Image 1 (cartoon, rainbow, N blue to C red):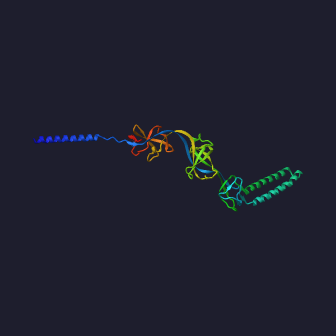
Image 2: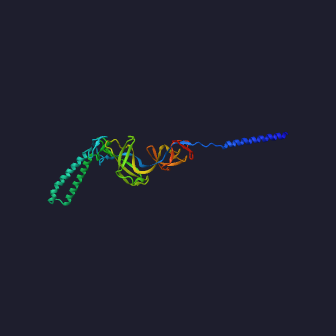
Image 3: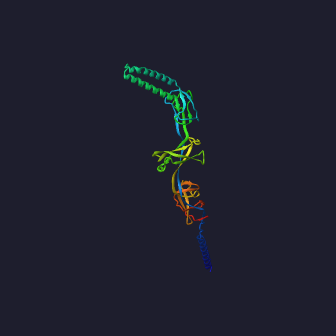
Length: 340
């Protein structure tokens, strides 16, 4: 009797345990489905995009010249201009000591007198033709020496512009440094090294937009004036000279500049800039494409910014929808609900 009672209690306990296990297993089998992530979206649009290429450079004077005499070891008699002064082409800007010139002019007068006196003697047959030719050669040589010294005694500016450096004072002995440095700045130039792929697209006379940091939001118009016919094998670029009118002289040599070329148009795919995200720890860009209520992680190659949109060069098709919010909660394959 006692054994039967114990057996009944054990059976009851086992039945109760199995019932509890079945209940727990049933509860564990019920898994809640993850909630859809609420996102806002934008649609990728097909648009024509300007091919704008920007190159950084430095503004240069259109022309510049070191004013230097041909002969050294002469004293500077006078310098007529100073830094900041305007000069014109052909203007005398400095003179050198004329002592040597005066001596050469005396020598020339002596040779000229000798030649004049011997000419009638030669005509009368008093001296030979060879002697007369030698006298004439000596005279011509002396004239050239004097002409050269006269040229050096008056130093003229070969260009019109502004004096940007003065290295001597009146009375100094001229050595190797230029006396003056002159720059033409009523027009300027920029040298840009353009990628080889655009060589067929750059033409002389093409308009180029120039921007400088000192005038934010303002652009200056330049034109291509020269194209280097050879490419740099190391950088795969070619040199382009851009001339910029500068009558009001707001721009100055040495300013940092950005030259923007319009290389034409191409068909592009644009999305809102907030849709394009940068992957942490790399330079890769990605978007979440929303298709049939599911988010798809996709790498893209972005191009230039066009207003508040970004041109997607590769990785996205026009008409596809991409998420613009909730990036922290999104993942590849996540279910989404679109917020209007």
